[in-house]
Image (cartoon, rainbow, N blue to C red; front, side):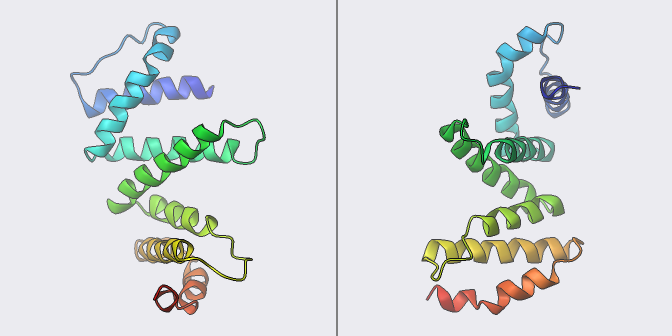
Length: 164
C-alpha cells in the first residue's frame, strides 16, 4: 500500500471517527489529493482540541517526513522546518496525554537537537536537555524499558546548575 493510499485511508478514518458529521468523497483519489489541505487542516484542528488519534497521526507523519528528508540535499528546508515544528507540537500533545511512545520520541528529539560533542552548551541547548530528561523520566515511569542509563547520564550533567 503506497503512502498516499495509507494517507487517504487514515485521514478518512480519523475524520469519520473524530466527527461523524464529516464525510468526504472517497470515490476518486484525485478528489482526496485536492482535499488534502482541507483534511489536514481539520485533523490539525481536532488534534489541537485534544483528539489523541489525530495528534498521534500528525506526530508520526511529521516524524516520517523528517526521517526521510533530514539528510537529503534535495529537501525543501522550509518543509523540514515545518515538519519539525509540527512534530514537536503534536508529539508533545500526545505525550501530555500519557502516550509512552510520544514521550520517548519527544525525549529523543530534544536530545538529538543538541550537539553533545561541542565543548560548551548554550542556555537553549541546556533547556532542550532538561526537556529530554523530563520526557525520558515520564516514558520510564509509564513503562518504557531501558532508559535508566540515559536518565543517569543526563542527571549527572547537573542541568539545573548549568542554566543558572
